Length: 625
Image (tube, rainbow, N blue to C red; front, top):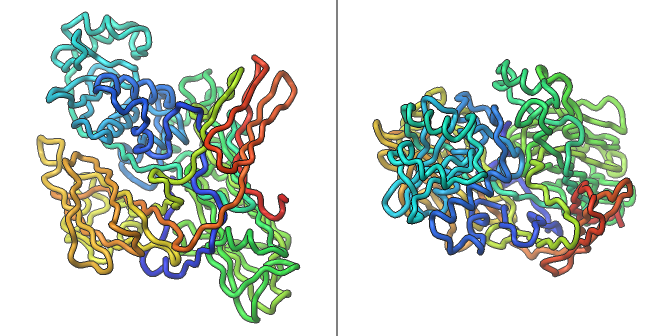
């Protein structure tokens, strides 16, 4: 799967984003739960803030185990050729979208969380004689051992962490684990024996911590998140389809992702429904279009302002991967209904872009009205753009209606289920800094020459995309630009680095930033670097573009950048609605909240057998009034 790409540099200058009345990153969480918009908001949970290292490690183990179940096969994304680098192990991708991972991915995700706390170094330990994958965390100048997938935290009598050398030979450490542990052996004694006989290999963790729950809900758009699967909707990469054991496991009942054969389905879904009004009031179009050129809304539809050519670009952007209704697991060519466009127009042509305007591919429409299924084109991505081009005269070349329906995969473990009695929820919007920004993820995959070099304005000395050890050698400079009418409020920067022989750290990493022009780079104080880095860059004031100079020794192997941008002009507020739906016996129930300024609300459930169905977030448009 490929992450949604936002063009930088000159292509961004073509985008004209209208004043928006949408809602930025709307989310609803049970009162008292951490805000999972980003790793930073998650770790800043006030209940956890003053915990000592041991207590925080215990909390993170339990929280991660609650949201990510152990499965034999971890999900993969992207075009990365190296299997270990393609595994989804970003903590929040697992939390929000997948809910399943193998033991190695869970260990990497926990290690990424711990490193993000800033409390100490971290490394992953693999065992020759056990499927357990351990994490060693630094605390008080010593290393302590955790098995996050098994929910095991090894603590000594004084409450400090036990080191690896102490664990196999100290029965008391195993007796203190309690009943929550889930080792993949017959019993704790078998686990202890397997660990004692194993050779251990230490490595740096390889999980990013960059994913966010950022999205914009526009006028005429709603997002419905379901508690259970809505059909068999999922996505496998080409590499996964070649794995016969994985395909055989997914074909066992129930089909698809799961923790074990015969167990419950390991996935659920969400659906984005976007239907702006194209007639009369132009508020929906001004709010929802990325680009409007020589077109305007009239009583009859979206048409040319003057004779000639015009265009409108609309997008789908999601923090969840797009998935279609599956046919044969072995062959994704019969999947369908991932993202469906219904449009009625005359004198129009359609095209789509997965790289935010770098390339456009035509969509064939033989008759109007048209219904276009883009499953084969966009399944597995996090979004795309639709371009509608008109040619001719006003009111002759015209778009009368547009509807875009997109299905996404969500983790059932992170759905806020209603419980009998009073359920209090907290409403949150905006990013981790409270700003109304949109996350623009720059796809600069080092496995893809076009993707990596697109934002690069001064190339490195050597670039070897097929190298498994050292891909980008020598300093390089890149540019990240905000769309016209927007500015960069802050950025997330990250990467994976080649490490020195017999070490878990790179030789050095230099990261400099400049504004205005690619000169006078100021070094960023990114602190101690391991094999993975995630860092927040916050300029002194919002900027239209940022330049970065990166020099990693021996090499940089993966690059991550996300620009969080907001509109320069004043935002127009718009009411939005939250609707919980559940059943009591066979009777449907719902509770709707018209969001104004309140921060919390309560849903009362009187039936002990209530069964949660869905949570809907909606911004009414002209058609829904």
